[in-house]
Length: 215
Image 1 (cartoon, helix red, strand yellow):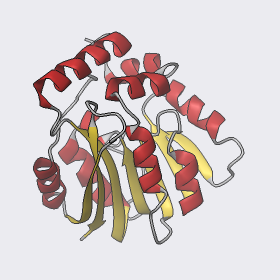
Image 2: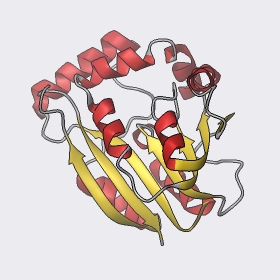
Image 3: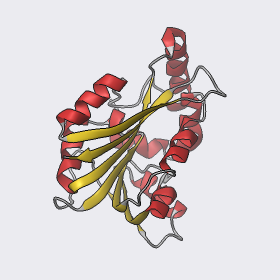
């Protein structure tokens, strides 16, 4: 069995094009556009699962400072390359389930396409610990709600073609309800959970964009 670290290390070179193919649409771009609308500014932000740095430049524009993290060194290298001209971004290796950060270190925690690939309860507990009182939690999570069995089977086949397996290590398929319940049970108040879809490319994944605050 391939470990998550090894899986993401070997996927770094083709992740950007590969994940869009798996989703079957432009969901990542739709998530990015939604993130750009965040108000007010995010303050000191930590990003987990930064991957190739797709969301990091936008987070930098919205934040005073960003610490972008991932478990895979090759992913971190790509984020460093993408943000090399952004002085407010620091890139370092961290595991979102158990970080090295002190308690109450950040105003905002952002997990882009990450929560469904890790231990959800452990990760949200850690987010609660490292966020300041009233700190914000932002999540982008893919969902197969409304996709139907044929669509699910096509997505599994695309994943097999791109990543060599039916799903990524640790994958959990959340619904609007199961995700909301998990967040609430972890000490957060959900402020908003938007169901996003790509109307121009039907048949692909939809997504949940979550805004929550530490109680």
